[in-house]
Amino acid sequence: MARRGFDDVAVGEEIPERSNVVDRAQLVQYAGASGDFNPIHWNPDVAQMVGLPGVIAHGMFTMALVARAVGEWAGDPGAVSRISVQFRKEVRPEEKVVAKGRVAEKDEASRTVRLELWAEVERDGKTIQPIKNGEAIVELP
Amino acid sequence: MPLNRELEGKTYPGVTYEVGREKIREFAQAVGETNPIYHDAEAARAEGHPEQVAPLTFPTVLHLRSGPQVIMDPELGLDYSLVVHGTQEFEYRRPIVAGDALTATPRIAEITARGPHEFLKIETTMTDAGGEVVCVARATLISRGTAER
Image 1: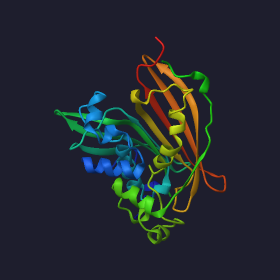
Image 2: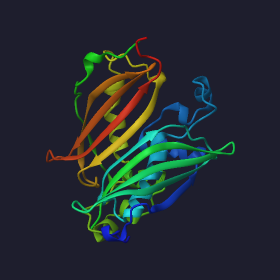
Image 3: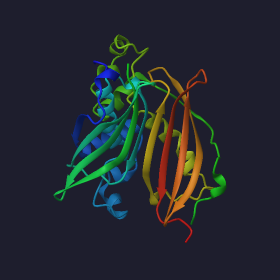
Image 4: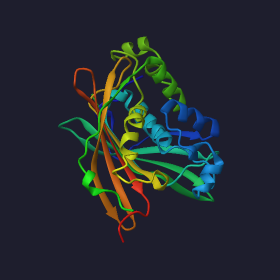
């Protein structure tokens, strides 16, 4: 995978988005792979009992999509020194999540780039952001 | 019932986790990571890594094992059914690779309140067998409606 160079990056440019249509099988697979067996992610009865419309995706499953967008943009996950997100809304099965990001800042001295990150879902004709105010620090050659 | 603020700063015992190639592959498949460095040691070496690389959110696997002792701590008074995950941050010193034996040590960094909710910040430091810090994970758990009125 080609590594992105510091000089090839411009402040304001967007990183290629990554998307995923969530299905229940993915949530069961993620539960097993991560070890997060909270039933609100796979048992609709439990989800409804705690006031949710049904099962919801793990926040960390959505963060993983955002992290994938960052790693693939950098061309090397080892270039990423920090990544953070805020979880603001739930993601439901059958919804298409789109992970997005933009170059917010470049620091010449340390050859680091700060990305702003978020994730979007279309619901009831509106765009909502299950992940907001995300950020990554990436060190580029 | 508000959380016990006296536990701010409390460090819990470290939990050691051996990072295996198949576990990394399983995790990479679950999150849709197709880059061969997550699936194959040779491909990772060709890209300059010492071994098969773990995806960026893989440390989740570790703090899901070290975290229960914090959230189930009877002295903390957390009702997990009221909890939502508010924020997550990972700070990396180097990529996690297959063969790492990482010890995840959680600490209650801060307990604050805003409006009706309380915010529990847990910082988990992951060190390798040589004692070097590999990753620091910081999570905010929101305890809904438990703040003192």
